[in-house]
Amino acid sequence: MVGRKTKLSRRNKRIVYKMMTYTSPVFAHAGPKALDRLQLIQNKFCASTRDAHWCVRNSILHRDLELPTIAKFIKDASKRFFDITGSHPNALLRAASRLRATTSPPFHP
Image (cartoon, rainbow, N blue to C red):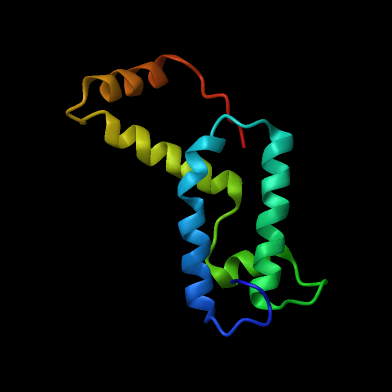
């Protein structure tokens, strides 16, 4: 669906990719090696979406597609989640936000 030969616009390819990132909270506690593998997959996705030559830097592809790296995306998603939980009506979520304040996060980008 997001390959080089598809007639899908770059905007729609980006939307498909962003829909796939909704599972990112699952990877919040993944180890560095797993995150590196996910980053490789994301880089390949970016290159195939843009039909980029092998020598184009990944940072250029990410900038053109307006996509953060996997580490930045997971960090931002976690921050948004914990910002929301502090005022959530669910007591378990509020407790999770207090727990975060007393322990160090396992993820260090």
